[in-house]
Amino acid sequence: MKHRKFLYCHHCGNLLGLIHDAGVPISCCGELMQEPNLVDIKDGCRIHADGQTTVVDMNFPRDGVPQWVYLQTDIGGQRKKTEGFAKVEFHLGDHEEARAAYCYFSDRNIGMIEC
Image (cartoon, rainbow, N blue to C red; front, side, top):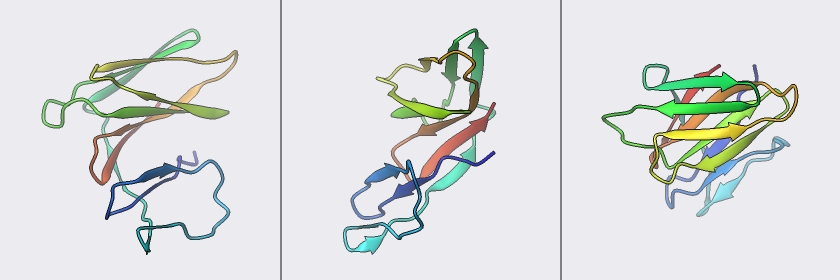
């Protein structure tokens, strides 16, 4: 599976999620943006699918609740702010399947779990 690509600025903290990667370097604050570290979070995150509803349930005692969650599907993806809640619910289209969830904790790491 091809993973979603994110870019991070080490100066200001801007974070981009690329829709299409044309291979051209992207700059911010006068320097090239870098890909953040992808950290396996299978021990603190569970993904439950029930029909067209997919719930990402997070339990990260050390890191707290992520700022947002991105759910990658077989045909695209969705991003939601967690609003401080440890569960985020996504509603998928007909025949759409979850592939991976990414959790952002406001540092240079993004947690990732494959479905």
